Length: 320
Image 1 (cartoon, rainbow, N blue to C red):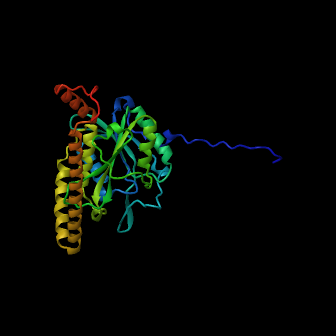
Image 2: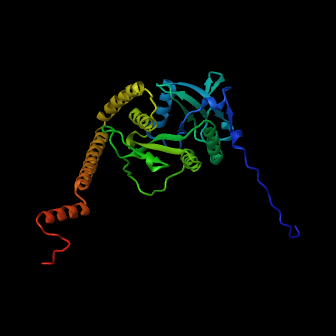
């Protein structure tokens, strides 16, 4: 082209075109400081996040604030939504939805919940759209929780790995992992982008027994709910979820009792878990005992005081 340098300008897609406000109430009157994000992602062992989200929506009063245009975000052929074929016709379509809800907890405190399928496309644009909505709704904290498979038994307390954009949100945290590479998710990207925009973000990876990864394990969902409430101060009744967890435990115990091989695996995990827990307890006890020991300065001060009491000034005493 005769040496002419051509430049091509790319239009940046407007993030606000991804969602539609579904309420006539001004956003300023829909404000809430906490945003819970539930996008499923590539893994949710024990259906932890799914159960917790369904419990929130089934227990608390809620309204829809905004909905996302999933036609721009989902690969339908990659995960086809279900349809109902009734004898000689298609009768229903289970259309996917990514929705921002406003919920009110048992004490009247509002919070937001973004729930739906993880987008297949446009993660950065979705993250920016969520940031815009969060900023307009007064959000200061984003939180999430999901299940991850671990070599732990279902017969012991459910543990979790916590993470946050600010160390002050990680009280009494004992990381199990160092620096590791993990597959990305849209939810994880939101943690990064919202933190870069000045919002606090925090999350919980709930430890689910690896042999229960593909089934519903409400104990993990209950642990997730308690962790979220403990961090945010939200009051979300858990009685129904606890009852479901009890039923799940009974069913799991029955199935395991009928399989000697699985019973042996669980017994081994129990011994491993107990040994690990005892090791951590002993380390904590040793650390506490070490903290109770006087420092070098304190020992020196006590020695100086003792020598003075004996009539000897350590500053003038010669060597032996």
